[in-house]
Length: 328
Image 1 (spheres, rainbow, N blue to C red):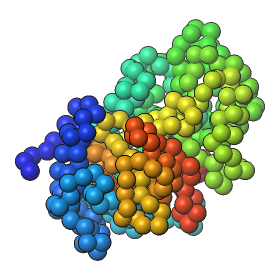
Image 2: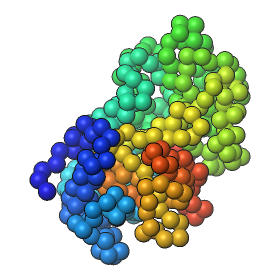
Image 3: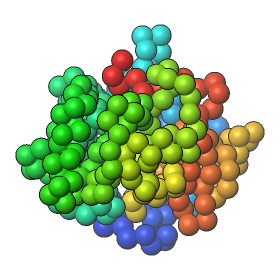
């Protein structure tokens, strides 16, 4: 198979053949180097060496991140990301070999979807990095805040009035601004400080369970567009177990960077996987070279023919997890 440099994934340009080749190489390498993945493949009778298509590559159930160390190769992790949750729940743990790989992944993805980060003022409606340093989301936003180098970029979770004042200052200046936050915190802010934003992108990162009455995505976006005066609500799709993110610029339709792809599997038959359709989402993240790049999630949704996808929710028996617990 020859050598494979994980940094090569950032030069992928959307060519299906090149992506498939990178996936086949990665799955075979991870089969050799990842004991948990190899054990799962052997139990299910799957052999990555015989796979020739994306949908045939076996995916590891995401729940293994709660009970096992999912690593490919031997290394001392630079950081261990942990999912948010209550004390009654097992947290997922993602052992990250090098933070620089994660940093490059989210900065390259941000640039692809939104341009250079230095053009933005970034306001986080999230706990600060010092409070939640094991959150991959908080680390990402912290790094983007630092990279923006804008004097007003920062975390504003606990001071809605100051956040409102900063937003108005940026609006007057015509400064491109990103307001990124967990869903319930954005809803609280929109209710307490309604305003008309023109130069600001509002981005929700999910997170409603256990915090307030469950709302549909359409209801959430209606409340946010009405309260903050924007025409659409952007969204980020990521998780503790991934090192890449997909983004939606409206209507909950997510798109992936070229080194990430979402497939869909049948809810009744977990081994029936397709490139499009409705069912349970399966994520390929080539930035996850040193853990596992093929993950069977517990998210239900739809993948469209162009590779974009929607997330409708989680399986009923899956844990409450994710961004809604960040500020518990």
